[in-house]
Image (cartoon, rainbow, N blue to C red; front, side):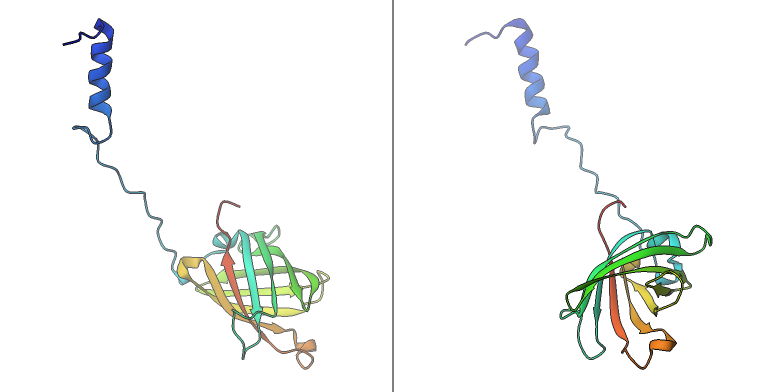
Length: 163
């Protein structure tokens, strides 16, 4: 039998003990799960960050959108219980941008959209779903434009990651 050098013996023994499958191995701890935010508990703070936007006509479906884009919400500087943000989307191949301002109260999501930051062009009303990770609802043109345009269904999906 070949003898190991004095310092090598302990290294070999420790290597065997610490190898995968060795006795004394600690059980793995499951990753913590995040609590689901019920629709009635969604607050403006839950809206902060980037969202993916899909718009389609009432008789259509989200899988065949007429417009897609992004919405970014942040804390409203003048009204702490509200959000302010920006929409960037395409419609009929043309890029569109608008400012938005709104809130989430008792399970309802409401938003005003304005291209110039003064006049309201559209109002949004929806309901948070999927633990607050999606919002579904209807985008309606403002009253002055009601005859010229039809309402659109919308879906907002929270973008993954930290924003």
